Image: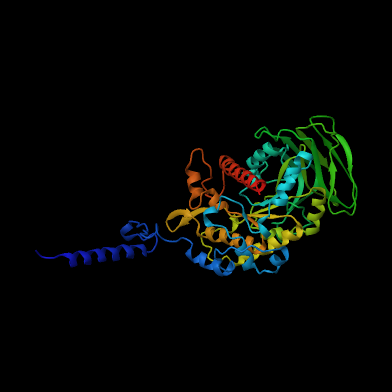
Length: 470
């Protein structure tokens, strides 16, 4: 019988050659008016972020092995270089997205925070300053996280609220109206800017400015508050008018002085309110930074989200302003959750962004001396990779770079990308009904915020239980 094996091999190789050639045809080639779609026979096996991961190995710091080293004392720890410190805190990759990775000395980064939480029963409030981007604006994610933890540790109200907001109609944790303000922020470039507040914003009355807050029934613990405070600065005294619960309006004075940040407190004497409104005459020397709505000791998360913030603009917040603010409103943990605005489909060099975040971390340390910092990585973001929809390549590299920065600076870290489900998780969330993510494959819906927020609350409780067992 004649052997056709050589013919079969030749035909197979020829077919493979033709298929590979088709992968390199120009996009949207239209012979005879018929549009050809690009095919990619290697899409399922290609390592999407190979180039960027190589870059992380150099720009993101040294590569680390899995050797474990336990420093004997604080002095020995301080004397080690960043590579040796990283070895002392190595985390198994299987734990990514399931634990808070602790790269602090002796892995005790949450000890002081949880100790503070234990003192809530003695009348103390615990506060988290959360610096984020549009991923958490409008209290998406944070609203459910806060509500769950307040159910466990007490507290009513949303904590810090801004004077003006791009997402006031979108936010479900508080009803917020305002008008008549000039708003300054860390993202408005090339314009004169007074010192902004701890949130990255400052507002100046222009004409008869007004603001109002009303409790929301969307969450169990945001309907009423017993404590309302305004945070401001002014070189001179300024009169304003305020009222609560539909009662007659009252005139009062905001005292001026040299202190960077001052506060006015509603004299409610422990009574409860579901509304607060105020109006301010035009006053060039008066800057309002925001308000706080709280009810009793408990757990509070101040949402300092800034749409479009990639992190670097936070360096425009002056440390002396933050320290002045935290003397009035102490902070127990700082969260830095940025990166979404640096993720693009064409990004192939993250060295510039690593340098930006490195400066930002150093700046936050000077703003919040002695306060532990938790870096939360960028979440999943989807886009077109060639002709296919999938996780953008730069997500992998940026999340790993953020982990390396946490190692280098001895901080806490949570891998939100893996916590959400890893590759293509945002696409799967957008495909669910009800949708858990928007079809921009970037932002969560309110339903998705509930899922991720409660996931983070569960993570926090597990970490708290693990701490209590040590």
